[in-house]
Image 1: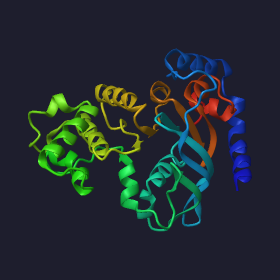
Image 2: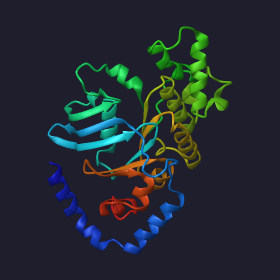
Image 3: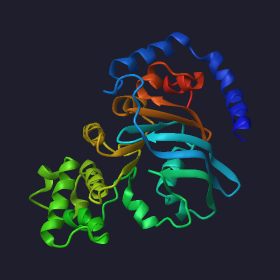
Image 4: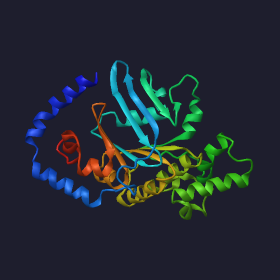
Length: 298
């Protein structure tokens, strides 16, 4: 199925390739080179994958949304997932912590493993899996409870604290990691819905961090936020590398180039290119990648 997809992709892009203005594409790539995130690791030194997929597919009924995807997501790094609307980015992200289980008619095939554990194995405890793989959605979705109760929810559910003092330590640590503690420490008992949109999103990040996950998934976390709040979320994501494995779906090419260590480009459910962000944005191997990141299509 992948070969037929490749042919279809190539046919779709042939006219775009012919029409695209090469000098303007090169200018766009030069702009990326000015601010692209460059990893501290030397060339040739790569992180060990934490999440691995081999020929992983997601279907909605008879329609394939993710087609034979094989990739290794590096441990404790930030990986951006880019591609045009409907290309399978969010579907793949939701499949990582099995949110796709909640969609009628959705099924998967192939292999996905988290640190060697089969994500879709028959013995996998989905509650345990979603503790290991946190999720932050496009729109902030705090519970209609106090700020404290929002962050404490997960640790209470999983029995991570034996008393109130331990629980409060987890709440404070999580809010500090989410760069929100100083703004809310004097009003933890107030309703979370009274926070600004950007604060609500950072609260949702704190809620995800509170259960000490291995992976944090972000599905366009700044698309509904103002520039100031977006900047705070980007700074926060950058601080998570080294401790957490982060996967972030974004339509913003500048954002992807600024904050990620690795980038994967999907088109029509197919993985077109995966590599270090500095390479993908300044020296893409595939012409269709260059066309997309420079705005020639999508």
